[in-house]
Length: 430
Ligand SMILES: [Zn+2]
Image 1 (tube, protein in one colour):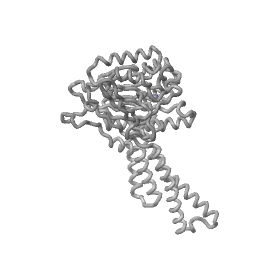
Image 2: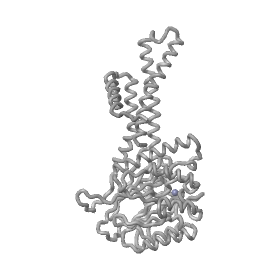
Image 3: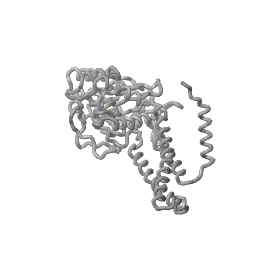
Image 4: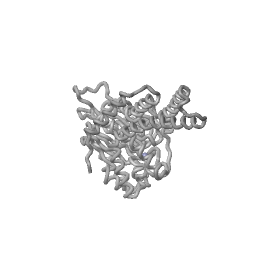
């Protein structure tokens, strides 16, 4: 097979560009081509960079950091829930299309967040898959490969940790043993603690303490007991948020109109029940709680014997999970002395980074398409008025010529737009 001669290809491209620039005229179709190229570059690449550039790792005023040093940086990604046949009951081509567009959104934001924010640690806060607990092995491993391709880590030095969600392993007494074991095989332990930045991060399968089988509940209980041994400030991670009364609100970061209320159904429950929540809080005594599952941001203060902690529920990372503005969490940890800190304000800071609204981007394209058609029509009508004799003799031939001209101009603009669009897609796919 002949290899591609890149210098020759570049020379041809350069020649074509110079030719295009040299012969460029400010005809409306040419202006439309430029506007479409700029619009697509903005909608497919630039707006994602702008969203992430607007975010910074949070710090607290009393943190003293040596020149050039930063706190420990953890990115929190909740509920990517990669779209599959269980998501919208779609099949065939439509499903592939939805999968492609939800994957590419997360792939590009994940890649940009890594290159621009440089997190040292990334936590997936559960529900990595949508039908994870349902799939037979063959299909699940295909989904796993897809997940790995979307969330491909750029730097080998980045530490990755995962939390099991109800979509991954099931909820409470409905936990699926095979899905539970399979998750451990690929993502590691389901109940574990890890020391990061002189904090003990306690990842607890709280779903098992909510009426789960004795075996799984025992594993979670054992971690609670173990967590009592450390003097480091503890960050509790639970996929499903802990109990709060129905009157509790969610704070200003919530996108949707209603706070989290208790609700139950097949393999889900919106909140852990009150008793297990109290048992967890009084056992772990965290300074901070992180959760997912709800797909929207929510803040709630929990009180326990001897302290209190804010629970931050992180919104979904996907644009197809009921929240039009996906996001991820930025958690900075700074506890240089390794001292036990009682105040939840002292050794960590958390912020939310909001991502572009994909539906707004699509709407922008639709509006641009309508305007493009109007501009082309107006342009052709003006040309026709000036040179109507060039469009034929009879009314019918004039009409056919005009229609042909319209579609060829539209195709000319569309060709440029499609080339730029493919370039934008390839930018993130390869
Ligand atoms: Zn969930």
